[in-house]
Figure 1 (cartoon, rainbow, N blue to C red):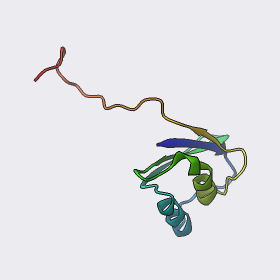
Figure 2 (figure 1 turned 90 degrees about the vertical axis):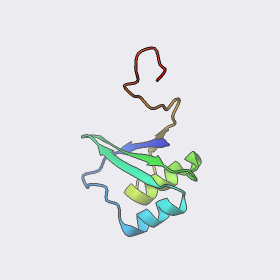
Figure 3 (figure 1 turned 30 degrees about the horizontal axis):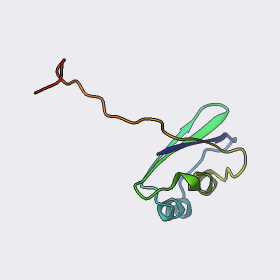
Figure 4 (figure 1 turned 30 degrees about the vertical axis):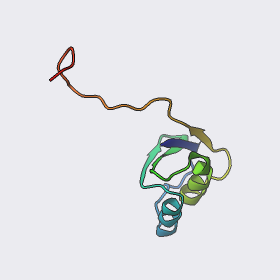
Length: 88
């Protein structure tokens, strides 16, 4: 998983068929688009996705080839309402 941040433009990013094909070629199987007033982002996941290709993925989806920043996961875990003290 990687988060790609880039400056937001006036246009909404769209997932066009060509961009989806490029994401699939890069190994992405799940994508989320995020945005606020000044920054847009992509959350990219896939078992065969190499985080080194995140800038290429951002360029394919949003045309953002410059000023791209990536955030790599430090930890990922599931959270549940398991009984206190663990066990069954």
